[in-house]
Length: 115
Image (cartoon, rainbow, N blue to C red; front, side):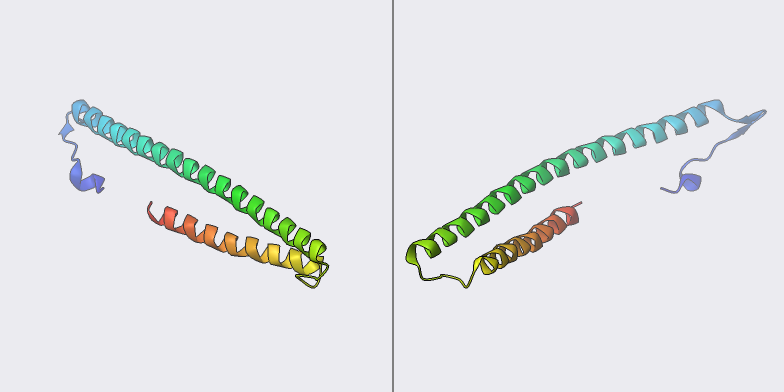
């Protein structure tokens, strides 16, 4: 907003016209209030989205833990190793979580790109 071209204060005997200045200040105040209200709504919406995504992270982490446990149980029951060792299981779990982190970051980027 180009303040100089939009608002011209007329000179009066002792300076600017009081009504022009008051009108300008009220306009700026109202614009700021509207902007702040919109910003607060956006922040609230993004916080809700973050909460949903955090819940999804927890769900996926739990799922990865369950899958790792099931994998270990199968390995113990069959006596034939499904994987080489527990370190390999941990690496697979870490890889799953890393892939999830990449997807999560991409989702966040997409959400933030909307704003």
